[in-house]
Image (tube, rainbow, N blue to C red; front, side, top):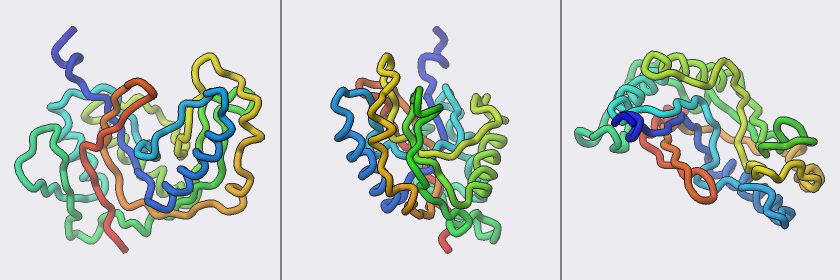
Length: 224
């Protein structure tokens, strides 16, 4: 095994939920967990709830600064670290004063409804469908992928279906006949509105009970 493969980081670009959206998602998970008496679902921890904009796969640590610079360029940030960082230090970024930065008001999103993917009959993933400014969100996702593809291969392909994963059906537990009936009815009538405040570069590590995430960089949107 090469040194690069042994030290590579499993990275992706995430859009975390704001507190209001997080509260809705947590309440939905709690309601569904009550019905999951057989342990059919591996539920996402609150700190792991997010929209994935781009999955990078395995990236060597020395490429992390270039990845962050590319993300900063997408939303026109200037990098402003508190001190000279190592590749794994968390970066703090500020907006450049050029007047063209992506603002939080450009993205008004909703958690529309809980869905079973790929189908209710054979579910593998439980997620919230994301609505609202999805065209702007897709443009951001594709811009992120295009920028990062110059640094590392992006395995996401061309498709982008914005969602927030709530849980995954455990291997060998399909089908799950109770799941469609347990979905909360009010989600389709009262979608949770939220305005994201930035994107983050996350590191993912597999462990007992599912993946654990560590933010490596945060790029906040300009307010207003």
